[in-house]
Amino acid sequence: MHYPVAWGLSKLDKRLNLPGLIVGSFIPDIEVPILIIFFNGVLPDHLIMHSLIGALTIGTIISTLITVMVYPILTSLFFSLDKVKIKEVCRLTPALVLSCMLGNVFHILLDIPMHPFNFVLWPLVDPYSIVGILVLVFAVDGNISLGFLIARILNFVFMSLFMFAIIIKSRKNLWEQILIGK
Image (tube, rainbow, N blue to C red; front, side, top):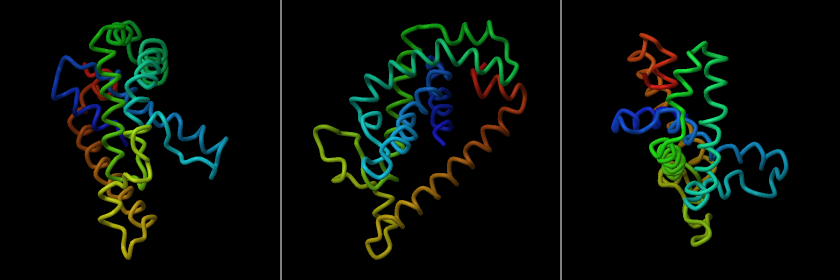
């Protein structure tokens, strides 16, 4: 549900690269299935990729590589978009790298209010000492798990409405507007 933020950033500043923002906004979550599969219950499902250090370094590098090398192939294959046009939009530029970095950082910023622990300032601050404000607000009788559930549901509803509005606005050339911003 991080796509609407990427799309919104691309509309706020036309110099930003939408594919870079999209990929960057999803990359921190690549660690989630890996951590669940290999460390289910032993480690939390958010670690270094959900820290500013991880987002600004590893996340930006992975996002940039995927945007340049994989994104054009997948979007042209699955959405029948012009591969040449996508490759041009996804070529390596400072704007693309900045967009990938911003996508990662805004992913983390969006996660902060709705998670019961946040690695955002790791290793400087204990992740369990930063509880998202929405989790605390909705933690009925101090039940952090319930607060987390309600915060996730609210985020899902809000982002779904935002996504629906984007789709309605982008009806003409839907996939091209949603995936490459042109």
